[in-house]
Length: 406
Image 1: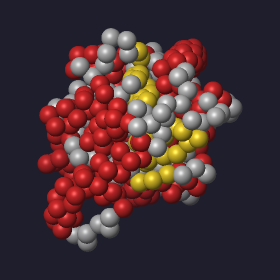
Image 2: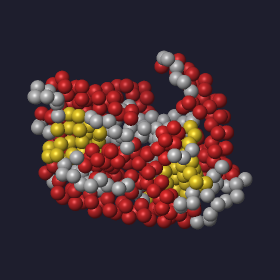
Image 3: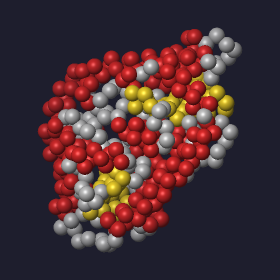
Image 4: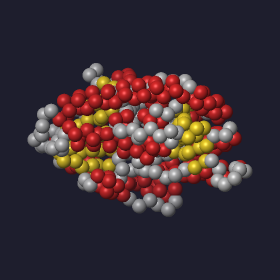
C-alpha cells in the first residue's frame, strides 16, 4: 500500500511537523505495510529527516525570487497562470501513484493568517479531485477550520473538504464552523489536536518566576494585508514592553518560537532587553534556537508559566502541563483554552492590554497547583480521543486494502 502525506510539512513550522510525527507513529504501528512519500513545502528536509522520497508542494516555491518587492509582485502575477497549470499536472500525477493521500492536521481549512487562493486552497482542491478521478482515498485528519471571509478561498476550501473521502477536526469549534458553512458532513467528528499524541518530556522542576514567551512573526489576517507592516510593528513593540515588565517584576524570560520565521522577533526582543538591563551580566531574557516540537516541549518544561501567540506554542504549554496564557488571533485559541479549563486566560492579540498580561501571569502562578492538575486530566482526555481518531481513520481509509488505480 502506498500512502502519500500532503501539505505544509518540512517548511519550518514546528507545529505542522509535530502533527506529522503523530501520524507517522500511527502509520508505523498500525499500517506497517505502508510505503510513504510526501508532497510538501520542504522536501529536502523531509527526506533528510525521515529517509523517504518527497517532492515540492508548489512549483513557484522553487523559483528564484526577484531582487525588489515590486519586481517580485509583478513576477508573481505573471507566474500565477502557468504555475496553476503546472501544479495541476504535478499534483494529479503525484496523487495517482497512491492508494491513500492524507493531510496530517494543521489549519488547512482556516484563513486566520495570510493566504492566497492560488496557494494551498487551490492545490488542495486539485489533490481532492485527483483522488476522486483516480480512485485514491483521501483524508483530512484532525484539521482546523474557521470562518473564511474571502470568497475565492472559501469556495476552494469548502469544495476540497467536501470532495475528500474522510474528514475529522481537531476541536468542536472547527467542526461547528464546518457544519455552519457546509464544509463538514453529519458523520464528521472532532477529536483533539494531533500534537497531544506526542510523548511529553520527563517533568523537571521548572525555574521559579520564569516565563516562556512564545513570539511570532505576526502580520495579521488576510484582510489586513494593507496594514500588515503596521500590525507587525505594533505587536513586536507590545512584546518588548511585556518582556520588560516581566523583567522589572523580578522574572526571567525564555523566548519560544513555533516557526523559523519567528526568530527575527525573538532576536529583536533580546537586543531590546540589553538596552535597558542595568544588572550584572546579560539580561534575564534569552533565546536559544531549536527546530522541533520535542525541543519546544523541553524548553516549556523548564519554565513556570507560558504566554504564547502561535497556536502550537500554546499547545506545547498545555501538553507539558504548564499554566498557560494564550494570545489569540482566531477562534481556535479560545476553543482550545476553554477545552483545557483556562478560558479566562486569553487575550485578543489585536487588543492587547500589556499590563493586564503581567497580572494574568501572576494569577497563573498563584493557582499553579490546581491548573497543573486540570491540565494533566484534560491532556489525558485528548490522548484518549486521538486513540479513537486513529481507530476511525483505519476503518475509513485503510480497511479496504489497496485499490486499483485508474
